[in-house]
Amino acid sequence: MDVYRRLKPYYWKHRYIGVAMLFFVVCIAALGIVRPNLQRLIVDDVIVAGHQQMANPNYTQGLPPAVSKLPLLALSIVGVAVICGFCQYMRRYLGHVFGTNAIYELRNALYERLQSFSFKYYDTAQTGDLMSRLTGDVEVFRRFLAFGFAGLLEIILVFCFGLTTMLIMNWRLTLLVLIFMPFLAALTNRFRRQIHPSYTRVREAMADMSTLVQESITGIRTVKSFTREPHQINLFADRVRILVRCHMDAIRVSSRFFPLMELMGSIGVLILIYFGGRAVITEQMTIGSLVAFFSLIWFVIGPVQQLGYEVNNYTNSIAAGERLLEVLNTPRDIRDKPHATPIGRINGRIAFKNVTFAYNKDIVALKNINLCVEPGTVLGVLGPTGAGKSTLVSLIPRYYDVTSGSVLVDGRDVRCITLDSLRQQVGIVFQDTFLFSTTIKENISFARRHASMAEVETAARLASAHDFIMETPDGYDTLVGERGLGLSGGQKQRIAIARAILADPRILILDDATASVDMETEHEIQEALKTLMRGRTTIIIAHRVSSVMNADNIIVLDHGCLVEQGTHTELLALDGIYRRVYDVQFADYTSMERQMLG
Image (cartoon, helix red, strand yellow):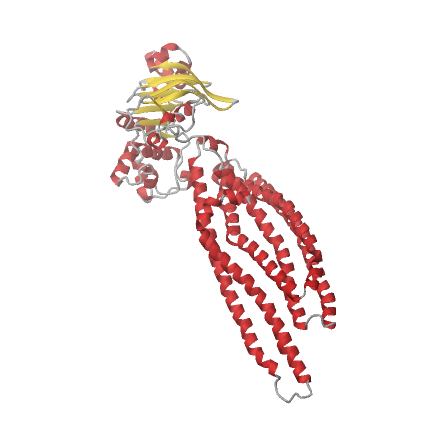
């Protein structure tokens, strides 16, 4: 029950609905005992008594007096059935209400938790696995909350009520029937120990399969471009095969358990037939009591058998709950410090002081970086792939925390500033552009949900996106496919730039944002961004020298180290990495220039 104790905050506030549901469970269990007793009265007080009255020498023609009780007893059985049916309806209805409301809280908490995790968490997390937890595992947990606890309570009540009634009727026969119960209890406990790891493996296999499906669908263009459909089909078949094998392992455990339970129940019935029949013959009990016993024995055997099924569901829900707790209990490494305070409108001065950052002990991305970016200036960042360019700018809005050193904005350590107030003033366009499956307008206004259409259009014009947007079927109301499918890489990047422009940040970061556009479009975007950059701090990460050559200051990173710094002219004079990159990228232009001069 430790899993349910730890998840208690999400369903306990709806306990009154759960208590109402359990009230009807008690009613159902109590009404179940009434019917066998009504059967006993019909047999003893109507059938047997009527037969004895007819056998009396003084009996005259007509129905015996005992038969007069039959209509009332029959109506009582019908009445009990109707009331029991109503209680069953209320139990299921309230169970659904309880489970659905509780899971509403839990699912929201899970999603909120996922939204709070830093980039570091998602560097290793698998999307399919998270989706499996948020959907499949939550649903398994919901079903047991809605019906599992009620089922367990009903089993206990039915067993106790049935056993008590049997002991009152004939305690000797009851004890004989209960001889095999310890074997049933031991069997159920063994089943519980074996089935739990089986269902844990089932949940994990389901998550692996979901991950593969999510990746295959997201990367369908890559799959098709390399004609790897057969490989992906075989890979999926392997995952399904593993899932089936895990399911079969669980089924084999269940299939061994339930027949043994049936056998134990049959043995109990045989004991009842033999010893109960002798008791009737020797007039130690009435025929009606024996008939009632045949119904009541299933109030003892049935719950023990049903216990196996409920244990099956319970262990499945525990496996699901453990996976949910893994997410809920994962610590948030990036959060507001206790002493953090909001920052007002910033000027945009950024300073890196002895900054070192490592993703883990084996991967050091930045080493002892010292850098200052003055407000309103443009910083160009150049370097080979893996040099640490994107990592450097990710430290400014605290997507990651430095390993050592400090990052300052307007002289304040970013760790002493509340995340919301900091990130609201930092606009970033990532190299890997992401668009949501909604309209172009909604994508551009993502950071400012209440922006007017005129503001959205202005941002799109500044990003050189307005013209191609107007060529789409519905203009700004055109729906974008998942992850921006249906748009070219350059179009997606221009929409992402427009999104950052509309956010009106004090610090603008362009992480290789023009990598997917042609030279002409890049020039148009750069010209449009000149107005936007005025008065705000801008950091441009690029592989092209043409993207950063007009920056106020340019730094060159290599293997996580700041190796060169200066203006375009100063870096060319150094004859270092920047000069080599420049010569490679402008080799054709230089050759042509020389030919023209010659």
